[in-house]
Length: 387
Ligand code: PLP
Image (cartoon, rainbow, N blue to C red; front, side, top):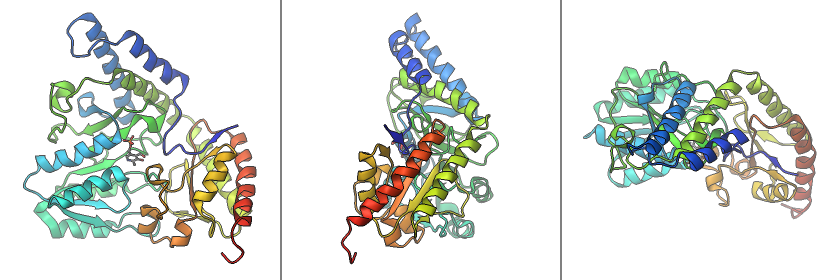
C-alpha cells in the first residue's frame, strides 16, 4: 500500500503522458533542427506540445521557451533580466521563495547586486505597501521584481495581479515563479500583469527535465544558454523531444481537470484531511490556515513532535509526505518559509507538508486519517517523559 501525499515535490505521470514521451523517443528521435523528414517530424511533435501548453497558459507560442525545468528557467530569467537591464543593480524578492530563486539571489548579492527582501506577514503574504514604498525608494535602479505565485511549502497564493499592477505603475518588470501554480489553477498570461514566468512539467504530471519560461512579447531577456539558434535564439541546445511531448499531453490533461469539478473535489479532500488531523491531535496547528491557499496543500504541525521522526514512521506505513520543502528535507533546520512567517521554532520543526493531486482518492484520505494519528501516538510515546 502506498499513499502519495508529496505532490508538491513531484507528481506521477499518467499513462497518456508516459505513452506520449515513449512515442516521441521511439518515433520522433530525429534532431528537430534537421531539415530532413525525421527532423521535421520531431519539430512538429514539439510544436504540437507548444500549442497545448500555450492553450493552458493563454499565451502566444512565440512567448514560450522550453527549458530543462523551473530551476533553469528561474536562473535564466533572473540573470537574463539583469543583463538586459544593465546597469540596474537592485533585485526585489521575498524571503519565502524556493531555493531555485533564493540561492541565485545570494550569488548575485555576492557579486555586488543589491538585494531587497520584502517582508511577508504571518500568513505568508507579501506586504504590498512595502513593495510599493521600496519601489518608490529604489526607483530607476530596480532591475526586476521576483515574487512567486503559489508557495511550495504552505500553498499560499500571492496576490499576483496586485503585485503586477504595482510593478507596472513603477515601470519595473515582474517575474513570477509559477511552478506550483501551472496546471493546478487557471492562468491567463495574456491578461495577467506578469512579464516573465517559470514552471516545470513534473509538478503537473508531466516528465522531469522539461519546463518552460514565458517571456512576454517584445520583452527582452539575455539568453543564458549560448550555442545554436534553438527556441528563437533564446535557449540554445537540442530540445528534449520526449519531455516536451509528455509535457504537452500533461498540459492537455490539466486543462480538462481545471474545467471540471476536480479542484473542488480535491479541496474538499484536503479540508477533510486537515479537519481530521486537527481533531485527532490536541495542539495541532495548520500553518497559513487563514490565507488564500491552493486546494492541494496542507501544512500542519504537531508540536512538540519532530516532523522528521513522523516522516520516517509514515514512510514505513506507506505514506509519502514531506517536512518543509523536498529540497531541504533531511536538514534539521526549521523551514525558511515558516521562519520568515514568524512561526515559532517548535511549531516549524513539527510541521508536515501533505500535498494532494487530482488522482488522490477519498479512500486514501480515509486511510491516511487512520494511519497518521496512530503514527503520532507512536512518536509521542517514544519521546523522553520530560521532553
Ligand atoms: N520553484 C518552485 C516553486 C518549486 O516548487 C520547485 C520545485 O520544488 C522549483 C522551483 C524547482 O523545480 P525543478 O527542481 O523542477 O527545477
